[in-house]
Image (cartoon, rainbow, N blue to C red; front, side, top):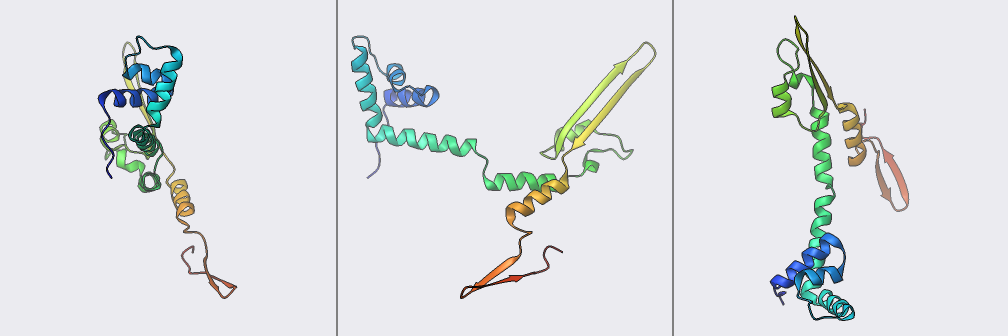
Length: 170
């Protein structure tokens, strides 16, 4: 059986509750409480958040927020892969100078820091650029650990464990 959609007042209360954590204040945000005593507001708020559609929406939105707040394994592996593939030469001109436009257009998670300092005096003008990229070796080592690339393959047959070196670590 499909859940009914929340009313506008219920949705306002749910949104307010998720933002502030108070069911009573959430109820006040969604409903008129002009002639209600505090105890009545508290009971009504408790009852509102016990309604199955409201409870389901709070759970759904909490789960969505949790998923959005926590980086997935795939995201982490993607970032580590980008760092592992990164090269400082991606951001240099043919003369070996740091090209700020390349850093701005291509700079991803492999760029740790870019500093551009402009110095001007009476008879000179100088620009100094420093670029620091993240360590690709550390990223690859972390990927290897997460993916188990550096573990020996094990085979368990009737209580006997064999360690088989497949040569993948060499």
